[in-house]
Image (cartoon, rainbow, N blue to C red; front, side, top):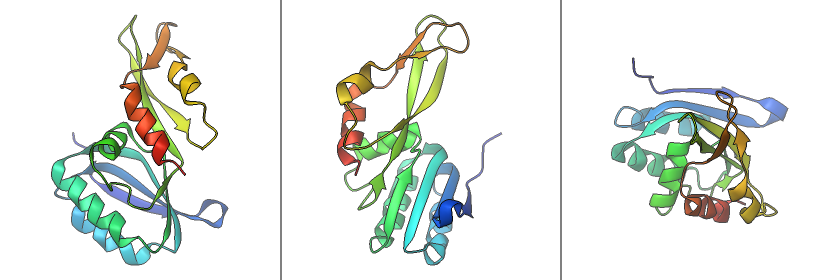
Length: 160
């Protein structure tokens, strides 16, 4: 069963956070636009729950994020599909600051894959980040970034 597009707001540390879950597609564009008047001047958008983005959803996202240009917008926990779009579409994040992304890690021993959070900052040592490994929770093997490192280089360049 497919996950439906869903949003919710929270206010940790007195900063508004918009949580987006599900696919960005032909059904989510109007719902995104309905959120604009509810978004405060300072807002974090959590994208960990984004499951898929198609071309119509990408267009809807760009229209949405462009409408927020006079606000202080931070993007956090950008899902793997979202990071791919950042790297493919100029202006996908408009003026928003990216603070963290989810990177896909892959175990060559058992073929297990999982997402790991990478916090971005100007001080991130890119060379060491790309060498970063994790222990596979399934077999104990070594997990490495499954995406091409250049995708993460572009994301880091867009951070802060």
